[in-house]
Length: 352
Ligand SMILES: Nc1ncnc2c1ncn2[C@@H]1O[C@H](COP(=O)(O)O)[C@@H](OP(=O)(O)O)[C@H]1O
Ligand SMILES: [Mg+2]
Ligand SMILES: [Mg+2]
Ligand SMILES: [Mg+2]
Image (cartoon, rainbow, N blue to C red; front, side, top):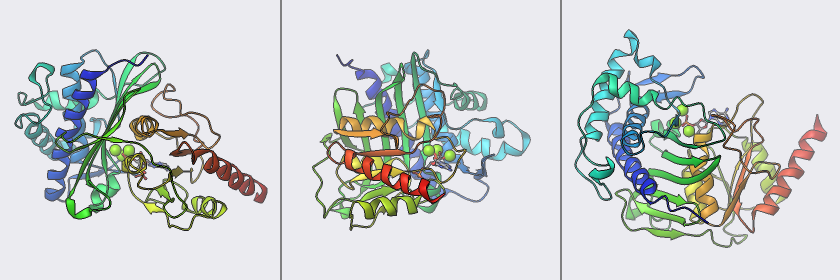
């Protein structure tokens, strides 16, 4: 039996919508000194921090007992050198928190224009994402800007939120401000929110939460089938994907796109399979980079596994554990992609 999660879905869509407005407006105003390089050398902007603060504040109001696994933490903003960035983040977050009521907002759930918050409250909201994760109970994951590198290039990025209960993703929301609403008609404009609730299907909405359109991965044809892959060669192996492509006689070049927008595209039949194989040892995939995408593809009728065909385990903490890569595809395509991946892995092993 599937549970309703009606309030969770509505809160999550409204929170992601509000954060998407923030990130799109911040992009146009982003100036030097509003981006930091984190310990792992990856970038983070005032938009990432402010969006996490907004989503976390809304979740805290609606579900105060739920722990949050969020990508960002505020430690760099609590020191003197981070003051300028902190001031900007507080300003941006408060602009979003106090913005007018939007579609789907409901003051009873704390979704809607709230009171401006103090510096401390904003930093504490960001740090509420410090939960270590685990296999039991409810928890949310926030990736306030997934694909920060794409965001900085003015390309694809996604605001991602999921609810995990006892290691299983139950609700997933992916907001993609720069993604065409209709891939066949880019002139119709950009901005989509993908939503999935376990047992209730997948949908695409407008950025303001309107026009729900159910999504089902269509049966692929050899002409339309291709891979969706990261733009960043450091995040997933392009050469491995090329080899799998040739094993499957795929003629269409891969679509390179940042962020979980790839899962959204797959769910609406815009690309045949999302393949992400590690480029080296040591990196562990983060749960916030895949939880909303996994439920979206599954609810659109697809399959998501690692390269061994095993399901992704969201109960191991903040990461997916040892990285065996990710394969997401429609249910008819997944078995043949998995077989080709195994074959390519075998070839790579034989070479060393
Ligand atoms: N070496 C690595 N291998 C795989 N993923 C990595 C990585 N280094 C960073 N990432 C993750 O890749 C995500 C972006 O994925 P993609 O390449 O599909 O756009 C980043 O999310 P953020 O941008 O939220 O930090 C980050 O978590
Ligand atoms: Mg990041
Ligand atoms: Mg990410
Ligand atoms: Mg991120």
